[in-house]
Image (cartoon, rainbow, N blue to C red; front, side, top):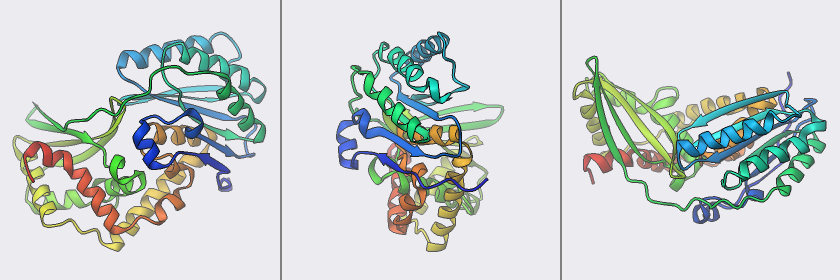
Length: 323
């Protein structure tokens, strides 16, 4: 299958406006991709949740709306900590009416407007825009409340899991720098943090889970190790950070190539493309990473990634009392 054409456009507010508003207006958080390769459009809608109950209620209301007729060809539901999504492949003739019914069911639950993404031909994009314009969302926006870094530990079968949650570096340093920081630190080729742990002679695994807490993007460190080795591994990481974690150009280049391959993988189908666009934007990771990954990542420097890694380390600094 040939590679998809470049996205037509994305409507996204400036970062300072996003920071002030927490939630921008619905028009500012729509992704519209004209792609004529598929006969039916894919539409994805994402919401941030204040509680599991709110997310469950929203899904139940939309499921009931879907069951009332005009069924899409495919519906998938997905969830992340603090967020949920519905993605559908919709017959073009049914798209406007079906989507309006779904959006009204959501609006009746008192939620704010969704992040939206549509991938299809010009008619599908236009009809989705009309449907979004037809429904008024009166739910309160999230106010940006502070997130305190917290630590939890649990031991089971001789393995202690240390969990530390704090603010995601994307909030301060931007989605592209944060994505590369996570890739350099622990998720790409030759990850930085495992090498630090190995040099310390400790046995521990470190990984990251990103999500939302009260509408704010968060990152959670998951450290699995025998007894106190997890805390010692974190101390070793902070010791290395205190000396300055330098990101070499070749390391950044490899991380960028790895991340680009992953982001382009979302374009294999219209459903996955729409889902990824809405997911990244809903979670505060920046939907433009999926929408136009080359442009989003091209200008990120080693210094910016180093700063974002410092932001990634900040929850650990907070809970272990480092300065």
